[in-house]
Length: 300
Image (cartoon, rainbow, N blue to C red; front, side, top):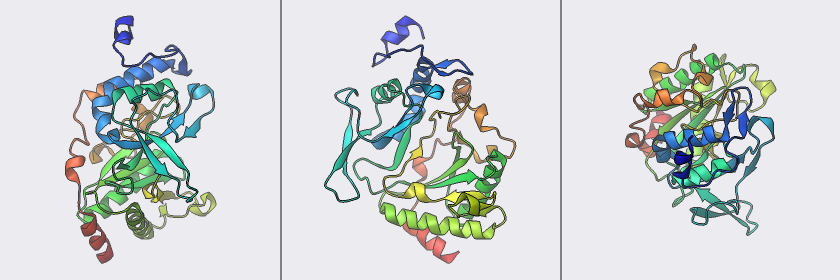
């Protein structure tokens, strides 16, 4: 980034040349530039959503820590949402609410590489507008995740539900089903638990709902718990703190193949993908009835 471009940023970047990915040479400023470029596609998924912060101030070289309370160093007008703790202690946390480029870049400046979002908007924290199935291959191989993802898609297809796939930016996949706001997070979690149990039972040699690593025996874990209240998922277009700075990339279902290498979508080359069509362009126009989905599941 040249000095003139730097002056156009809504924040002042501290130590812009700090190396976050030593193997690739990517700096904090490279990450800032990426989020500026991708923000028009990222913003629909972070606008008015509660964020949990994963701060990695030294990039790949140091440790990371999670933070829910908004940092004091964030810009004074940063949107926030206060949520009471679930333990009924009377305590509460002020969370960052996404949606502004200034907010996103200020978080990156604090070492937030990934963007972790709740499934609901800040105005109604207990009412998600999507269902998430987290696909975690016990083998650590994406080809297993891809096959599992296609099983999940087929199950949603049989129910008449439109689903969307993305790489997790790590070794797995996320499959999301957009829904109309209305059901409580507990209802969505119950649906997701029942759904993954049925899909895993139908493909018991490949898939499992066993939380224990030992009990999985190398099978792909279908995780419904991203749907619990207060849980988060990595946002579409989020960079991950992994080798080669992979991006959690929205996919067309035709791209979900055993040969796909998730790290091929990364901080260094992602601008090329932005020049193409958006496979999730109609995500929010595809919201479906949760009541109908629940009825369809009961008939399976």
